[in-house]
Amino acid sequence: MFARFAAAVLGAALLSAPAFANSPLPSFRFTSLRSGTSGMEFVNGINNNGLIVGFRASAPQGVILSQNGTRTLVPDGSLRPDSLNLSGQIAGTQFTGNGFRAFVRNSDGSMTFIEDPQGRSTDAFGINDAGKVLINVSGPNSSAGAMLWEAGNGTPIIGPGGNQPTATDVNNSDVVVGNVRTLTGETQAFRWEAGAMTILGSLGNSDSYASDINDQGDIVGVTTTNAGVWSAFVWRTGVMNALSLPGMATSASAINANGWVVGSYDPDGFSSRALLWINDQPVDLIGLVPALADFSNSFAVGVNDAGQIVGYGYRNGRETAFLLDPSSHGAVPEPASWAMLIAGFGLIGAIQRRRLVRDGVTQPLHDGAGGAQA
Image 1: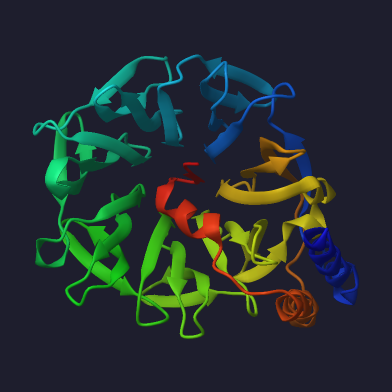
Image 2: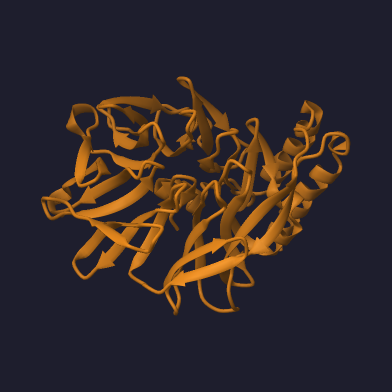
């Protein structure tokens, strides 16, 4: 009930902004990707051809492929997809009796499994359009590492002082992002290219985590702040900027080539709401898509260059994936309009307790190219 009040306040802030009529935001068509009325279904990402990948965690389990209203279920409950590229190759992880191993499912349905020479488990977290796969490995005695894999060969990704990183995404220039333990003990986001790693730092002299990178090299993720709140960030040309809301935690999952960022925010200390940033300004998706008000929690996890957004949440007590398809593109609102929107966020922050977004902080650590692993 209180969460619906929060949504109502945000909606009122959006509707009361006078400049929106003259400078409209994009409007979106909502499509539920759920099949049937039972079971748990999640979405991981969407490519620039509009192909969506996700998975069904309840019987019948399997990988879900959806495009232009056509849905296909690959009936294998051991597979968990993470990301996909332009040609429709899917990278993910197969759970086995002895651990897990990375896989690539090709567009013709054939499978490639990626094994570690040392026998450790492998986990795919991203794939670019050249078919290069980002792999994290783990084994006994805290043995871990990351590598960029291509055609049977893996290039290791090494952190400062030999620390082993966790990699989360790779773009089409083979630039990798993730997080790593620094020499001073923090866990911080990194950028890796051609063997050289750059630590991105944080906005609170503590931890940060990168979740996604676009082909322009812009990086998004989550960071601590000096105010003690977790905040989404965008990193461009060496500078990290907060994508924050007054008094509330935010988290960024994905960024497209136009700089649109999707993620979530915590309006009330115990729930999450899908959020979009355009030109680094927040857009409450519930205010634009009334159907999202029916979700007790919602997460935007992927966005392609056409502005199609995918996510999932809890609707009528069931995990439900969704697609938001932009039906029109207007201008970004004037600064005064953004002030009205932020005022709505600030009101909620003032009347409700602050708390770290439970799902939003952990979720970005599983992002692939344009998506997230649930």
